[in-house]
Length: 493
Image (cartoon, rainbow, N blue to C red; front, side):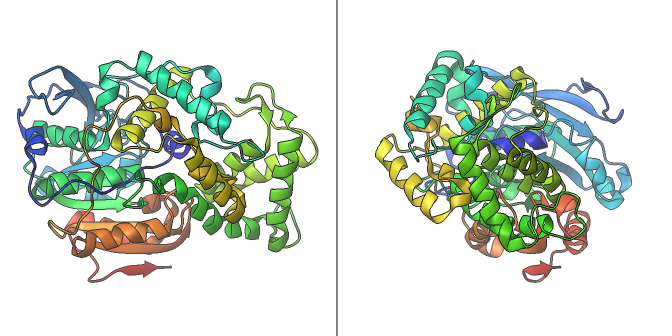
């Protein structure tokens, strides 16, 4: 689901809930330990050791004895029972990602010492198949990437975005059922504590990535004494869903942090996908091409939308910046567009998967906190963003379905604090398009004495065992295996 994590971007903590002790609503999440029935997991290519089960949780934690839903979980047991410490939750990004296959996939990248120490636990968050699932039944056009992320019109108008947001919000109200009102980050954290209890663990360790760092932070706030070793990887700003909508605005800074790296690569001698003679030429080349495609889109049969326009190019830029290995695809798209052609349309996920992912993402973002409903707020923000951050064309301050969401949030959003055990290791790349360093530093500040942070001199999203550094990877692996953290924040080259 890494691509889903990319496409639907990121959310993190915001202010409002008093922590340090469990609230009655939070405490209710720990009750009712269950006997899990482990069976063979569905799907191909999985490690034969992986097994799956379901955990029943309340749809509404304010009514714990009311309707229940199912949370799907997966597990590969510790490879050395004598060295086993406990369970390691693999918390996915998104919102709209799942980690059901992660014990078989990314979990197997973990060093032997970590795989010996933990049962690796994946799960599908509430609303995500194969857990009890939701679907908004959106129109095909509203599933386009450049609609799901709210790119404004070439002239900066937000009218079409407001209309699309209303259309999607209405579809979710009409087709999402009761569950869609109860999908939120706080409820995902409560579900994880039910999973912990069902596993029979007094405490649980976690590796949260991207939006998963927000879920991890929420769990740290709700259940501080039930946490063992917590790794937060590619970290969100701690105030993402208030009026500033910082999680979406992160793309402004993230694109600016990353574009110079792309420009250096795209102008390097000997690069078969070279775009310019010097790095300084790449930015005006890109901006000029995007503006031309705003005026003169190129038909793109099989794509959604069925044209290569300026916003599709800008979105493709953001996508490629998640991993430098994707730079060549962006360069080839740019070269094709310069010649008035397009490559074959990219393959997307099955519509049923995209509908499910989109519904969970929208529900989480919109249920976590209020968004403004006044179009003037977005017009002003888009105009300011377009002037200051032309690479992202105003998208990071534009309207999403939350501007027309028919329900008020059921509770205040999370406020990340420094109260609780000092058992968090953050790992962060210096150049990350989706969760930029500037936001990660804010989360580091909010956690205070609870955390130590490793910053990698590296480019791309997903730091640990992916786009980070050998130094950073070794530091995280040592922490998970032994509990040893650096004495102070660390910079890894």
